[in-house]
Image 1 (cartoon, each protein chain N blue to C red):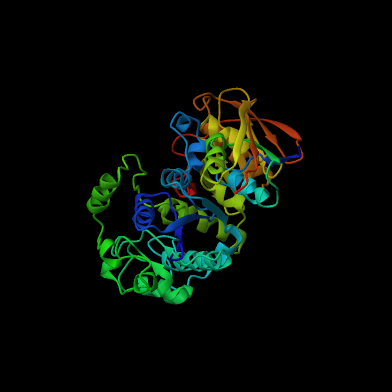
Image 2 (image 1 turned 120 degrees about the vertical axis):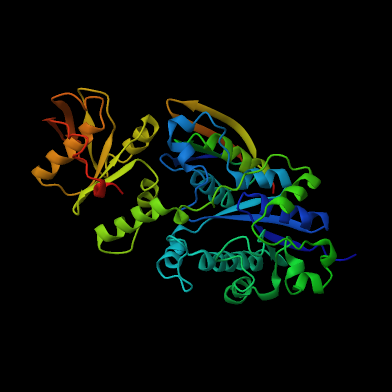
Length: 76
Length: 347
């Protein structure tokens, strides 16, 4: 399964959400995006955006002041 | 069977847009939301930056509203296009640098483009007549319809009964008698409607959602333009205006002094774009320097920063000047006295 990594470091919300959203438009159902963020708000905002737009959040985690969110693109 | 009509809603994250969408959903309209990011949005940024705010729950209210309503939300980055709105507002500014009427026209125009591209039927907003001094007046609301080109495909469900009929009403897609006639600055009708719909937790209005309405922010933005000799900015510039104390001791440079640890961590991310002053002998704020300094300027800048360190009462404070290539120059300075930091330096 293909996964792309998005560097969202130093971006404040909602920019990480916008980056994930714009990338998702170019991807196919089942493909995955891993966003690497420095704004802790991304841990809430990217999952919220994913839920309302029909995507699946596979993982959220914080490590060394970095915040990781992995999203699988849905059918919608 | 009649066609399922679709509306695109401008979602700010506040109560009014939340209610406007629900009113449409009650009438069987399919709704999706769009939210615009200009770079000046208050939403979330200071929470993200300042450590003392990190214990508060962080949420993007537009996304939260969409989730409550069960609608899709599309967040549109309009940072670049918005510059023209800010630099040359046809209808001028409000109390500060807020081009509210031009801003609303621009957003509705963008929503119209989205509506047409996605085969939606009309646009809704949570506007209420008389609620905002520029963009939500009885005489300016038709201007938004005219100048955006959306004409009668713009419906404001919360005050529609005070306005001429729109296309969705005339065509019978929505029932006019199930719309509302709110007006003025009172929030009571909205709160009552929120209660009726079962919304208990929603964003409280707190003086708008845009930094351009903020007097202090407008002062800093004007200073930025003056120092550059041109009305221009990039996203990083306008983000930095939201962070730290901004001090301009001379026309050729400005200091951005972190007010607490979270801001210091945020400013640290700009070390390749701006030189820094860092206090080493005592606790002290990370400071970015925007501009070119002479050796005399650097001495004064260091003394100002020392004034904001825990060594402010000491005879000498040690610090480092670090340029954008990472070269470190150690310094020892006498902190400025409390009366020596001039009020006219503070932005």
